Length: 228
Image 1: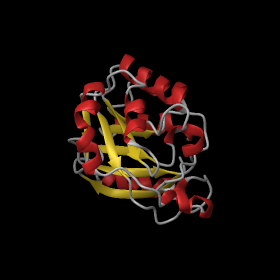
Image 2 (image 1 turned 30 degrees about the vertical axis):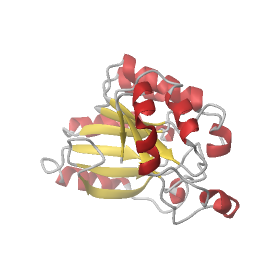
Image 3 (image 1 turned 180 degrees about the vertical axis):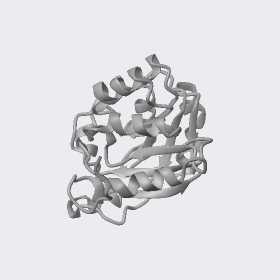
Image 4 (image 1 turned 135 degrees about the vertical axis):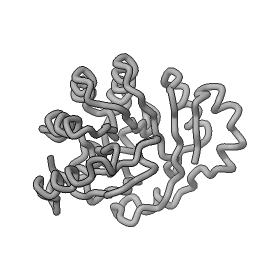
């Protein structure tokens, strides 16, 4: 596992579970609004395995869960083995994923290694290439289906990135079946971004007021929608 950082305690990343968050290096998308841009590439400063396991062993009984985030965790070749070791220590495990490698998520589900998952659905089918530099909607949709079929508790997350309109959001929400929870995250300007994206990052982004105006329409499509 190539882990670029750790948040030692979190009360918000794993619903109802006191956890730590491990941030894996490497991602197979390049979203223009990314807040973890330093983790997109697999190379760079990372934590050594010994320090990670020492921390996790010391926190047994104090923390209840581990969130594996990124970057994109499913790109890690030893992810399954890593989670299996976490389970042996008694931790509950949440996976944050962009859903681009559904077969790897399926393998984790088959082995009953996931307690919860958060799946990022970035944009509509046709906007994925311009938003993420990858044609990834169908893979993410397949991942949602895999999680549901295997009885894994999960949520879908979408960032209301600059340029996404209320009508575009309606189209996105209607492109998938009813989700157990669909969380809308409001856009915040990232500290680091590519120069070519600056103009786009300064475009208008939907606000809580915009969502509230269209909320009846949104809830009609996805009744388990939350926005914060």
